[in-house]
Image 1 (tube, each protein chain N blue to C red):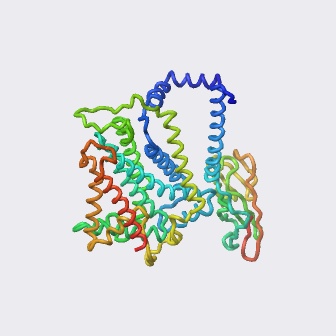
Image 2: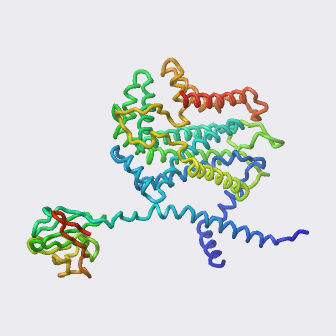
Image 3: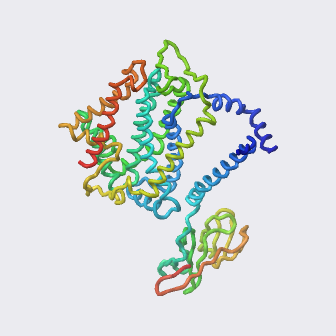
Length: 366
Length: 142
């Protein structure tokens, strides 16, 4: 043990790590009644880290060329040792991230954690959600399968509903009149460099907001306090709380393990869950497969475009809804956070989730 | 009746269990990663076929032999020699000097005979020889 102690001391007198550990981990106190939903931020960080690692590994074999992309994915899946595992972790991990992101957002909404001068925290989180959907969309094209090609064709075509600039915008997104090598090049660059860089910056900003303002208390039990909106900055402290490390860290680790197990269970027992037949056929720009559908988290938007008499109305409704959601902390100004005392909000919340699920199922079977 | 375990002993036990579990987990994640990053074994074993007409007497024909550069030449009519084209000094690819009828390494001036023997310079050993047989109008190498 002596050499280890010596090494710890050697580093500590130079960098003051013990002080940092005492202040930022043991001394970082969370509310005593903090619940499992608060772990979703840590779960998402773990899942995004896994995406970065598996993404770097896939880059070693993937070729971003419309003639070679599909073959390179086949090579990764069939010939590279454990290539299937890293590719599946990346592809299925994207779906699990979307599940965790939606759960995170829904829990924040239900507990009204965006209240109490936490608008920036909410906004950065909301942009992360949208950027992640962008990462999913750009990553979806890269395997250059029939599914990739036609889902991207449909998704980019939706921009054509915008008056005046629609047609130009579609061509601008694709880099050409139709989806092709130009589209693959720009989607690849955005997916592996542009968007991840912005995402890392946003995650840093989101964590900064959470840490600087102080974590909110769950609005349940005798410890409940209404959100205060003071005219000056105040860091919300929890003097009688539990330390982040080791107490809360253990809970974070347990839920991360649960999500990893969930993801591995899909990979090993239901690997085809997110891969229809068209995902295993090379893209053919002259043959559109039947029943091409976007990923499950875009189904609501896909169906919304179809149920209105014109695409522009469908697109407009989506824009209005997303803008409302983004600006919710600026609109919902009441101090009350307990769900039982917010019947109107909870009714809209439950109906909203049911509507999302119903439209998605409709979109899937339409 | 309950037996009290001293806190230090309990902590050491938990720490050992945690370290063991962590090591197992690291190994479970590390093995696929190691295999993924390891060079993929050549599908080799199979022979490389080159048309006899491409190997002109007095000239050298360079080709890919299971992912490595190799060369086949016809030093005398009907006699074929196949060699690895990788210099045994520091791994550069040798060049054929038709006038001198010898191989020369452009990196440090190593010289090899048409049979791959060292004629001069720093190479410590001859070029690796590869079996070659004439089968009809095809040269089967390997």
